[in-house]
Image (cartoon, rainbow over all chains, first blue to last red):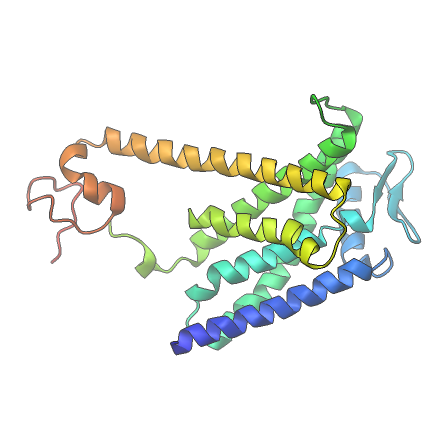
Length: 178
Length: 95
């Protein structure tokens, strides 16, 4: 096993430790403990919709008029975990030194957090529009449409962010000669 | 392909495999959600892959040297298929 591969394996282990800790925190956290992600998301949604969301204990951020709650299940923590995994696994081989690989990991965590806020705000905005103008798709309940909307938004955003990051990080030597 | 495989694998792992390994109950709501995830991500991946294949096929077909330079155009790998001077716009000539 080469030195580079050992360094990549160490970076992947560090990524697994971070994502495991995040997943464990998320699985037991209530709305108060998830303020670090719910509060900025609610602020962004408020800014987009010009509608106030009020924090309610054990529920999350609620707007009674829109009849919408930004609850722990809507926090987007799973998307953040997926984004960290995708960035670390996808780009760890682009970095040559252990320091660069670990820097990539920590940058992935920070950027995944920011990406989650943006993507989740978009997802909630679409969900609010769908609530105002309900879609009817044969065989799907409104809850399933809400879930499907989340999957489409999260998955397409993940792929788009991955392609963008790949273009930014791709080494010139990895490109085919033209 | 790699650009789709890693996001897809991560998405399926975190939304389906990890909850199962974590001991989440495999009940009707979980199965509903898993089915939606597989159908939607599978459909989107198929659409993107088909689009990419169609675009690269169209690019090859539109190339004036498509017959002679196919191996190079398709793979980007240095090829001995084109003698120097035959298709100067497409082939890679080592200096």
